[in-house]
Image (cartoon, rainbow, N blue to C red):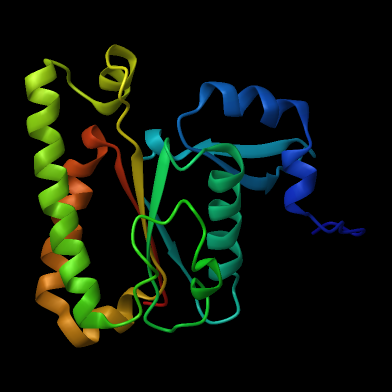
Length: 195
């Protein structure tokens, strides 16, 4: 362990020249922190293509989620990126209510979350048809070819275990379909759970 630990802030990553270069090249840039060498660590969500954040209460899941959201909304416009937030706990994601990047108001009820996830699967299938008509394989090549670009969709679920308790089958089915097929159409999942 480090004898003199330093506080790592988001700003220390986002003020670096490496971050500036990275945001120009990456479709969905995410700041993660500073590495053991002191250099900024970042990732491109579009290449990952999904994130599972797990850990017990107080281990920093929400901090990680907020860092990811901040990185995305600071670098992408609402025309390039839309966010869908599902927060059964009504605590972590509700402060984002009203930001222009939201595709839909923050979802807090489990039954509403099921409807939103099912409509996202329909949206994904519609996007596949659009890509097929344009004769391209994925969202990146579609956006290069067309003047009207297709925004990336990032789905954030704050407490998956909570959702699974109330509507396990529907939630699991929709999330599995989105996880398997979403990447090509620009739909990415960020899921936080305790177990």
